[in-house]
Length: 219
Image 1 (cartoon, rainbow, N blue to C red):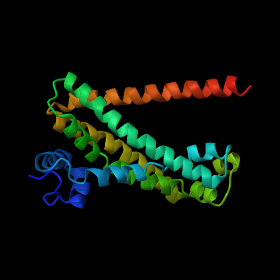
Image 2 (tube, one colour; image 1 turned 30 degrees about the vertical axis):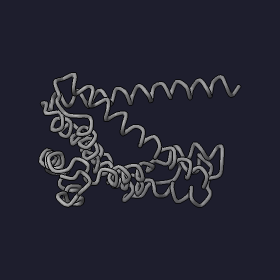
Image 3 (cartoon, helix red, strand yellow; image 1 turned 120 degrees about the vertical axis):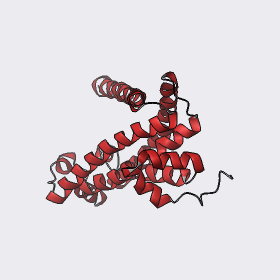
């Protein structure tokens, strides 16, 4: 079959079906056309990556709020794009170490199709932080004012929904790894844990560098 065709795969059916039948959905995609809607889905993930306003708030110390919003979006998109390929490779290597048989291309596909909850979570995150984004877009740069903005009941519910979706995304990721690598869910869990350790390690290193910058380089 021509790998560039997508006629055998329905994007929206697969997008929503993966929430309730992840193993069957991912297996269908891997068997029929692993590249179906690969780039549109990855693009959607990248474009919805900047739902948290904290980076933009920090950048307002250095630039205007509009510039901070743009730079924050570009930085988050670039980080998400790079992180996808790197973390998929980590999962591929760690899964292979546990007896997995999946190819790197199949791991990338399975990893990508476990991400629809992240996309919906981003929308709920943006809704939950909508008052901050609105004030930023109107030119507010005072961090104390932005941090003190109240949250409505709807915003709290949106942020709670975001947390639930993020947790479900992690569950789907384990199922996706297990299906693509043809290993048990327990082994897939540990393969997925490897990427979390990498993420925590990167955050730790960045935190140390930021603290060092604030404590030493600015004096």
